[in-house]
Amino acid sequence: MIEKKDLLARFASYSPHVDATALELSWDFAAKAHADQHRASGDRYLTHCAAVADSLIEWRMDLPTVCAGLLHDTLEDTATTEAQLRAEFGEEIAKLVVGVTKLDALKFETRDEAQAENWRKMLLATAQDIRVIVVKLADRLHNMKTLSFLKRDRQERIAAETMALYAPLAHRLGMFKLKSELEDLAFVYLHPAEHDELARKVGARLAESEKRLVEVKTSIEKVLAAAGIPCRILARTKTLWSLYQKMERQDKPFEEIQDALGVRLITGTVADCYALLGIVHTHFKPVAGSFTDYVSTPKLNLYRSLHTTIVAPSGEVVEIQIRTEEMHRTAEYGIAAHWRYKIGEQAKDAHLEEKLNWLRQWIEWLQDLNSPREFLDSLKTDLEFHQVFVFTPAGEVKALPEGATPLDFAFAVHTEVGWACVGAVVNNKMVRLDHPLHSGDICRILTKKGSTPKKDWIGLVKTARARSKIRHWLREHGVET
Ligand code: MN
Image 1 (cartoon, helix red, strand yellow):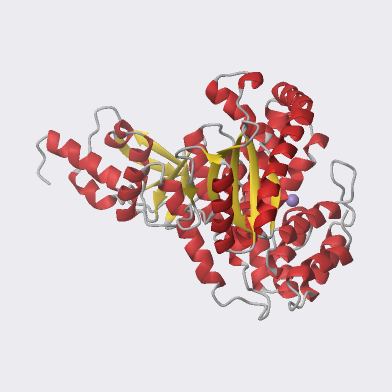
Image 2 (cartoon, rainbow, N blue to C red):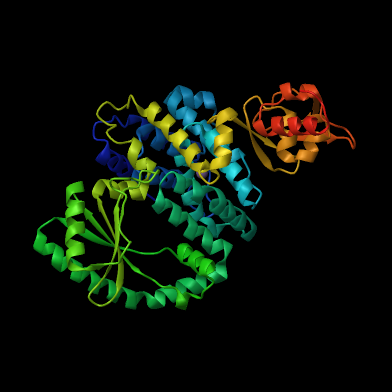
């Protein structure tokens, strides 16, 4: 377990001007609150809090986030109250801990991809503050690393949830390193036999691919050294889960998967990136059409790099990514690397809130890129985070705009259900059809055979979908609207 003084030193290494008293207090508070508790592994509970804080420090999160990491389980698992946290640590840290606790209360049960998407949205909406999600991801990472101590059924449930919810969230936040780590950890428990077999085969091939890699690195190093541009060369390795997915996608055994070598050149400046690219292309034959410039045109998630593929003297095909140190940080840590940029001197970034808002919008937007049509529709009414998440009695979650009514919900479930709707029960209580729904409500729609839409329904619905379905029915049946 990391010790308190090491944690403080690690934090100070990137925040030298921040007063870290709160961090010390958080450590002591967590140690006391969890004093009698142990993890399934038998370790003191504090090891979990410390590991979570340690990840947050690795991602260079700000002070309140790291404190919240230490305190994240105090509300759920100890006698600590929200008021106590607020009094000891202030509003910001207390709010983050409350946020994480709220997420813990949501239990994900389905394996349906479309439902998983709604759950991810709900997590983001519930979190309000992206930092809450980041703490939750650090929490999940440590829980996955210590999953072997739990019973088989819980292992499976937690691994499935990690694969469906948390790894995609990490991906959306641009935290690629974390995403692959979570996937590979979940892979162990979701497909144990396949995982072990693949790990064994990759291990057996390791010596050979190391040798190929050294050859390629040496030949690249030779031409780069002559140019005098400072740069380090890293090997890029494929994760087991991504290999497994490739096998599934191409329906091929491991032995037939083409395993292109991947190399990264990390340098100081953008100008050096292009200079390195020029040198590489002069000395090695580039594969036609392989060059992509994500430096001048970054990806939506802020990823930047130059990509090219060359043929090495040995005939080997090598994928090369060229980037600056800063781009490399963004590629590994994503959003976490970004918004903290330049916080420190004043301890508080005046634009933090602004940036977080922007991030939220960006995430929302990215989520909807899969279905641009639906995205355009939703822009009309269901703007951004003004959404509520309502459950069917079977536990499916539907995302609706704020102010949506049971009628909107009925049409979201099924058109026929909407048409025949005669009433609704929300949280076991009968409600009117214009009753506004709230996140977490469980809504049951009452239908009656032969019942039909009414003209005044159009005024009761908020979603474009319900409105057009009602209009459609009325038109078909000759009712003036
Ligand atoms: Mn925890």
